[in-house]
Image (cartoon, rainbow, N blue to C red; front, side, top):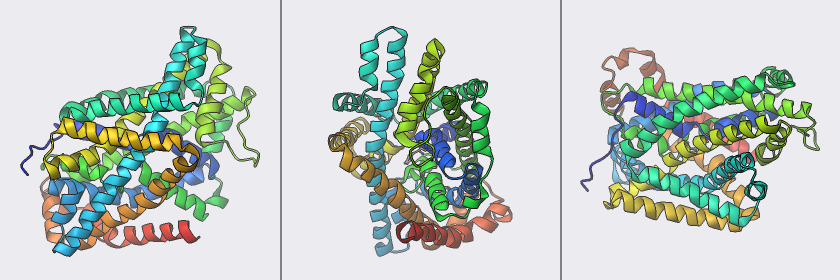
Length: 450
Ligand code: PFF
């Protein structure tokens, strides 16, 4: 079906959009707390190794297939297949990817809604509107539904404006704001009493944990989630890159930016926790490990901000603003996956598709909210722990085994004519063919049966 496709206007536009997808709640919230409860710098080290040796090659698989096909994952996996059967299996994996991307968005939108509510609560505090502020931070179905809907509306607004007018424009605006805000918060928190203790926990490795299967599984899950792999997001962003672009280079830039921001967030969250401890806030669970997940963001940090008077309100406002931006740039990339599929496969108008898909995902979010205790955790585990690594495995198989090596090289040569003489071409093809699939499967098996 002839539909004019969008394209990123520049390298900067692509790097901002793809790193915007990668940098999200996973970096600023997930990574630091995982590091804190998995041996500090030991986790950081394993994370760095896995990010460069497994996540980067898997990211490249998605980017190269996407750019070659200039199409969504379903058509792209069909295109690189040698026959109908393998093409159909690929198409099924593409469809599974878009379902998983939609499910991730359905829980991400709930959490992102909380971030916006907490941000607005700080503004209400500044204006002296105590009752409203309290309502905004209290866990209620109405608040949750309202802010999930507000967040989904923002997403629909950006995605319906298309690749350049929506994704690229907003990522290029928001990502520099995100980096600046994060850096300012880090500098401020490091000046507070107790921060150095947090820094020590973050940077002193507990090597006794380094080979623990739990640590490795968590680090792999974090790296895959953080680079938005396995659901076709990076494939579809890759499909909007110009043919002249040097893919290994831009993929590398995205990986480095993603890791940098996760590491930088560690310099904010862990010191902040120990500043909280210093101010009398409880930061350990009954079993003695550090508080993480929702209690950290929605209890520990707000309690810390509350001890800081008016400065605390400003810091809180800045922090939840940062979290909201991180959430928006990531979730637009999730919404683009099913939207691009519907536009390209069924020729439906972008605006109409975006509204229809966005409303369907909002309805799924509402179901999760109304059955919160049984569904919320289950959807997160199903999508991020099992589906993402497995689908990442499939993309590696298609790049390494299914796609003809000469055609793959031809694709890479478009943006880098001498690529066959470089290190990337010497290592990546066998890496994505053998090493990535074996390690992903081994770690996956360990996470189920280990
Ligand atoms: N990378 C995002 C984060 O770290 O929060 C999460 C994510 C975005 C996962 C897009 C999957 C996806 F398709």
